[in-house]
Image (cartoon, rainbow, N blue to C red; front, side):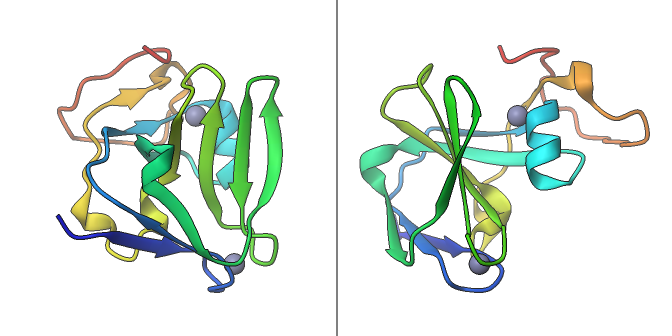
Length: 131
Ligand SMILES: [Zn+2]
Ligand SMILES: [Zn+2]
């Protein structure tokens, strides 16, 4: 499988993935909404040894006692999420990939926080919380 690359809006931070990734899904939680300024984020999950930065270094923010979010220090693009609940894994933002169409979300989590004006017609599994 080919490697996948991505990066932030300004180009200062770039990364590369070595497939396979593990899964991908939408997260409607309030932390993702605040971190992105968007109603929902789409994440892929991959073993951290298969994820590498190839240009620049992200800034890091502890968005909870168990999670770190990485983002471009220049333009703010959200790039990764790591949680002590999933040791060894890194989640990456699907929309920061150069070709986001290559990885499709397979489920929704935290739909208990889905905004009432966000209408989604897909038939993917929906979970009110994180499992
Ligand atoms: Zn940037
Ligand atoms: Zn979330």
